[in-house]
Image (cartoon, rainbow, N blue to C red; front, side):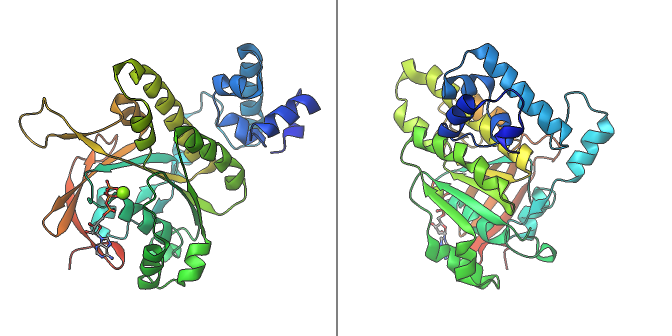
Length: 316
Ligand SMILES: Nc1ncnc2c1ncn2[C@@H]1O[C@H](COP(=O)(O)OP(=O)(O)OP(=O)(O)O)[C@@H](O)[C@H]1O
Ligand SMILES: [Mg+2]
């Protein structure tokens, strides 16, 4: 995966790439040519060539599909998808067995609906043995709201039979201070993922900084463009490294909805179209309800779950 193995990358280009946080061939492939051009100050033509070269190399190495593939190959790739338990059997059924790798799963809902609780639970369950719904793997957590609580993660780990200290040691945490910092952190994720053992990337919340920074109608297009780039980067990370990516999103009131639930996720079409799965959480008395929205292969159904010391849990 070393940059040296990429024909045409001289020491000067390599230096620029490394300075931009692009340390491997995989790191090139998870960025778009536009991003590469901006990051190392080359024209778009050269950036396209560099990008294509990196993809071809990965195809040679068997890490990526080459454009057209027989559907059977695509099927084989999909067979390598793995699943992480949410902590609730019911909730898992909604997802066809758990949160998938090679996908971006968006979780949205009002405050207190359990989005952050689900993210923290997944950081623990990803570490469980496979016969308990885990992948014996580590997690990366990007927190934009400052609501990650190690004490809570320790509690969930202990309740699920893991050593709390070890469980916390297996989670890499970063607080993102603004949207640019959030993008920088995600661009660093590749070099962490190269070292084996990560199967989960959480961004809680993906949209909040963009929403706070780009106010007013005039900035909407910029915001959507940045958010689009960010979401695509997440999707490529999921695919290239075979990890599950989970992002949270808030809801906003939809004044034009007169029937049904008048709340909808923020981020508009951009987030909607890049997420592979969208799950809507809502409160129902002491319990919670999860609903699968717009899935390519799951029916739109709802399941109840609850939050306990074990994190996300089934109703008694
Ligand atoms: N140890 C616990 N036992 C039971 N329930 C808990 C526990 N800890 C938290 N909760 C429940 O989780 C809720 C908070 O959920 P969470 O923080 O995941 O919401 P959220 O959807 O992330 O909201 P926001 O939009 O504000 O980020 C609390 O209101 C409480 O009902
Ligand atoms: Mg939260």
